[in-house]
Structures are given as C-alpha cells and as structure tokens.
Amino acid sequence: MSVTESYRLVGREAHPDPTVVTVAGRVEIGKGRLVVIAGPCAVESEEQTVRIAKAVARAGAHMLRGGAFKPRTSPYSFQGLGEKGLAILAAARQATGLPVVTEALDARSLALAAEHADVVQIGARNMQNFSLLKESGRIRKPVMLKRGFSATVDEWLMSAEYILAEGNAQVILCERGIRAAATGNHGRSTLDLGAVLAVRAMSHLPVIVDPSHGSGVRERVAPLARAAAAAGAHGIMVEVHDRPEEALCDGPQAILPDQFAALMKDLAAMAPALGFSI
Ligand code: PEP
Ligand code: MN
Image (cartoon, rainbow, N blue to C red):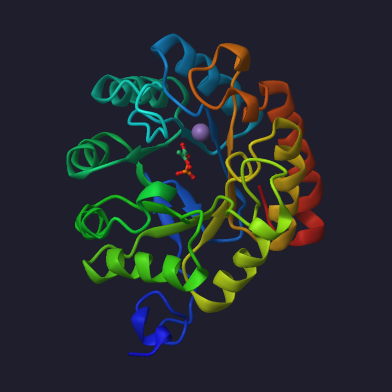
C-alpha cells in the first residue's frame, strides 16, 4: 500500500475541503479564527484551576486546557487528580464558559474524559497507541492528536487515520515539538513549524501548535506562538500558571497570566495582516 493510501480519509485527495471541528457547539477550529487554548499543565486543585481559567478567559482564551490524567516520565512524579480532576475542569468550565480539553491515557480515562470534557487529547507518548486510537475513534467528542516526539508527518497522519477509520472525523492535529538531534539540546524539544505547512498541504484536518511542550522554556513560548500563527496554524495551545514555581508539573515552561494577556494582544495585532480573526 502506498503511504498516501494509508491515510486516505485524512488526506486531501478524497476530501479537498478543510474540516472544521466544532467544539461544544460554539468554538470552530479550522475556520479562519485562530483558536487559543490556555491553562495549566495539570489540574492541581479546584482553587488553582478556576483561578487560572478565569485569568485566561479574561485575556480572551477560547478554550481551557488542564491534565487530570498525566503521562509522566517518572512514576514518582505527580500523576494527576484523575476523575476528581475532571470534576474540577467541569467546575472551571461552569465558572468561565470555556470548553475544556483534557488528556486520556487509556481506555478507562478515555471513557471518562469523553463523558466530562469537550475535547479529548491523545498525548505525544500515546500517538501510536493503536488500541487507544481505535477507541478514540468511537467516542462522540473531538479528539486532539498530538504528534509523537519522534514521529514523522506520515506516521502522525496514519495515527489520525485510525481515528477517522473508526468513524470519528472530528480530529485536530497538534504539533508539539520533536527530538531533533541535529539541532542539539537547546530546550525540551524542537518545534517543527515546517510540519504545520506539510500537514496543511497533505490533510484537510485543522492543525494547532503547542509552543510550551515545543520548547520547554517560558521565554520562548510567546515568540513561538506568534511564529505558529504566522506559519498558518489554526490555533495554539499554551500552558499558563500564576504560580509557576509551585506548579506540580511543567512550571518552567508556564507563562504568567500577564504574559498570556500580552500574547493575546500581539496575536490580535497580527491578525489583519495574516488574514485570521481571533
Ligand atoms: C500535555 O499537553 O499536557 C502533554 C503531556 O503534552 P505532550 O503529550 O505533547 O507531551
Ligand atoms: Mn505540560
């Protein structure tokens, strides 16, 4: 089978028109608006999540992120609040009106996330968890599929194909940085904005960019978010924390609420020249 046949549902050939993913009946991804998703890496407590959700909503975010089930490299790191975290995200949605995206790690958390969240995220480490991909093709919520940090664009699209092949066409792709040996270790990973252009040409699915995991360095998040918007991403997802030194996960790459508000202003200023709204 040729590579392009391997992602015939995801590819542009059979489906030239862009897919618009509608979240919670109100946020459209892939339709001319740059969709901004912001929030903490992890749901740590109701107080923390609602506080940060209100701050990002005030600054103009369209959706809230927050992990309840965390895929951590070390088994001794904070693993997330689990089901309780999903209830907290629902409270934050109630408080702000922002739809929520959260990660599923396995069949159990997928069922829970599909029930309680508005978008289910499949993380980089699970991009080729084929049974999870098939299961996520059977849920009735949009799926955000992050690129594995060693995955080629073809492999990423084939993983998306698993989801579409099971009947779920509401898929958003998310570039989140790769391990690029040739560039050396200048951060946690190397954001591959060229892949955004490749995916836009190859697929009808919307593609967003996560400059937080894509760099791992706070100072680089806003510049890379602006670069992603300039490169034609349909949205960005950034980690925001108001007390990053106390964060239970990924504090060094979290931007502060003020920095997030400044980024929103920058993106709004860029919008007319680049032909998107925000
Ligand atoms: C995340 O977005 O919380 C996350 C764990 O990202 P990634 O899967 O890209 O590492
Ligand atoms: Mn994180």
